[in-house]
Length: 108
Image 1: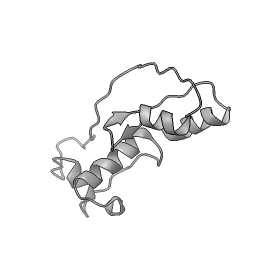
Image 2 (image 1 turned 90 degrees about the horizontal axis):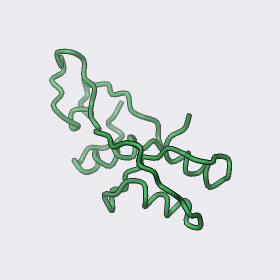
Image 3 (image 1 turned 120 degrees about the vertical axis):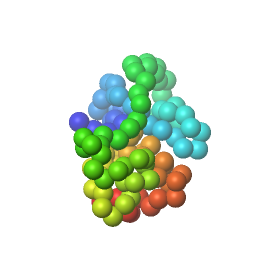
Image 4 (image 1 turned 45 degrees about the vertical axis):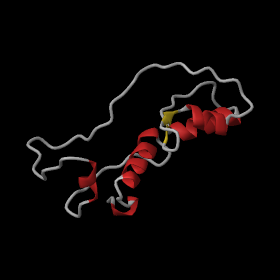
């Protein structure tokens, strides 16, 4: 298993025939197309939408830490299990943290 970015690289290297992808581009607010054009500029790629998704946080029953939004994941009393670097969710998450002025380095 690999993240979305590694999947596109595998396509470029010819070691995969297809790959899942859900990469958010913060400059354009568009998913997938900017990455595909950058990583596979000389290839004709057919994009097939399989699903649309909603991003969210899973919180322990009762919300004992009173988490109310993304800004809370940088609190010193919160441990957040982040996605792997290069995954679509991780790229989206890191961009959203930047938008709200939180450093990725604060995430433990």
